[in-house]
Image (spheres, rainbow, N blue to C red):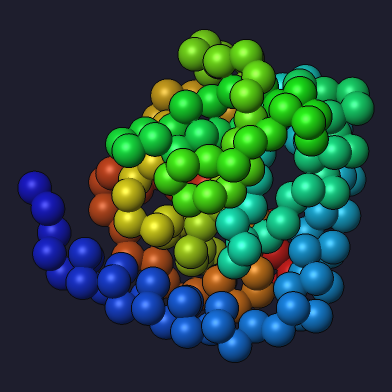
Length: 184
């Protein structure tokens, strides 16, 4: 059963986060990108992982390029492709293996298709807003929620400081994060 009040609360929160993203300067974004990447690279779960699923960032998300390229030297890196209704996971084989995606125009991997998610140790998860109870709100298509219920991987969310809010409206379909890494 769909809770219309939660849907409306999420819509309002997304609108507020988009407003704050529009005010966020390139300089602020670069500082926070760099900080979050440094936290990822020294994180114990990342250091101990063999296979990590990350994401290639949209312009308004934490840019993980630095982490992806560094981690790719020693670990298997997976990236998602957004289709009409779900995520398809492929192996990242370097910058030359990326092509512009159809859904959002972001770079997507062309490497080997991954259908067995049991080998994924950590998933680095983007989102629109997070709270201290580890609730996550995405863009509203449930791509990550539908994927995350299929894996036992550690869920490490990343975001900018203003994306941490007091309370994210959540229902039983929303998957909680294990940790949120931000500039705070």
